Length: 135
Figure: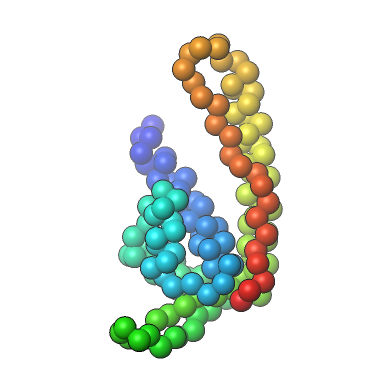
């Protein structure tokens, strides 16, 4: 098993979910999304983000608006549609169920480990995240 490849695939699998959460807080510029994802250690590049944003827009999950800029060309700000909000709620429910399931498996594994072996239990946060209605 290629661990690095598995890690990349796990991150890719939640990228849409994270992007929808970022946009759910209000109108957001793509470079701000990149900054937040990078600071959260979800490495993504423009060449990945922009096609994904286009796909989400074509699916009716988000829209955008152009805003004039005093320091250059107009900027495209993204926002969730009603369908995007409903989809995010469904994905959030799935995330909570999945995180709970994974934590159940991990906790059983941790119970079988001997103390002092240097392993650190891993727990996925399962705090519900409610999308704001600022858009």
